Structure formats: structure tokens, C-alpha cells
Image 1 (cartoon, rainbow, N blue to C red):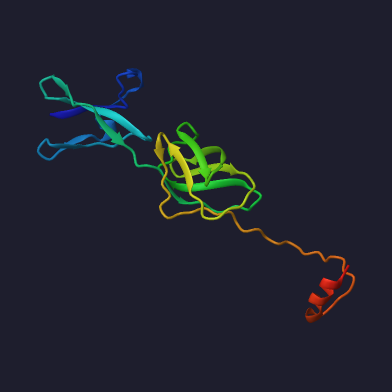
Image 2 (cartoon, one colour):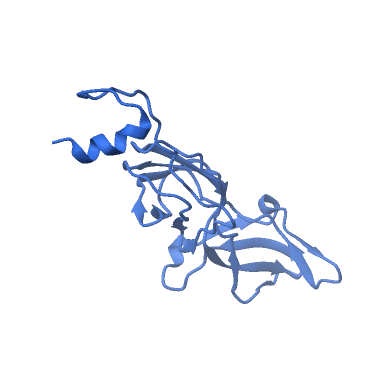
Length: 188
């Protein structure tokens, strides 16, 4: 027996969406005593049904039953903090899908939506826009083709506010600290 085709993303309700790959294009081969096979999966996300077509060498083609392949779920590795005024946020990790936002859904930090999310580096970076705000230790969540991202131990925090200047206030008089409490109570 030898492999002739890999029929990928097969769905009985939408046969037209299936893609047929030649065995050579996926490096498909039978290994062991005809008990296992290996092949290179096409780029993708989520889970896909597939079957394998074999030839017995006498011109007869046989196919396996449909099997399901599940791509690795998205994983957030790192998100550099941004200032409390908000702005572009980049999420780094794995299994984010191809460029664009076809499979990307509901990108959030804590309970705040990160707007206009898109995969900007295939499978490894998402860019979105955070509103102004402040919080500490929040999960970054989203789904890619139905698979929820995992954070591991990573938690996101806005950068702390920065003091850029101090202005003095108008005072009636200057006192040293021991007298300040007395004057504050008696000032009208």
C-alpha cells in the first residue's frame, strides 16, 4: 500500500471546502509494518477532519475513515505593557493563525475589549488597540477558530502612571511640621 492523497478539512455538509493534497506535497508515508503514517499538516487553526487515500498497487483506491486533527490551542507568551492612556497593544505567543482576522475573535484584557484585533505576524503576534485605563494582573483572552487562548502564568498590567511635574499651591504662610496640625485646625 502507498498513500496517494490527503483529503483535508472534509465536511459532508460542504464537500466543496475540502482540499486534496498529493502525498508528495505533504511528505506522507507509511511507517512501521503498515500500522502508522506520517504527513505534514497544511497551515491552519482549530480542528479539521481528514481521510487518507491509499493505492494497493493494483489500481484499487481505498480511503480511511474520517479522523479529526486538532491544531495546538493558542498560547499567550508575553504582552508588553502600555501606558494608562491606551493605544496599540501587541500580544506575542503561538498558534494565532494566519495573517488577518479571519479566525480571531473577542480579544480582551480582563473585561476590556482590545479593538481592531488582527494577526500581524502569522501565528505569533496579534495587534489591537486598548482604551485608556488602569488595572493589574489581568488575563488576556481570545479565541482562534473556536479554540480559547491560554495564558499560563502570564498576567497583563498597564504601566503605572508617571508624574511629569509638580506645581505649588497658593499658601497663606509657611509653618514647620509641629505647628501645621494646630494651624490647620484653627485656620478659617
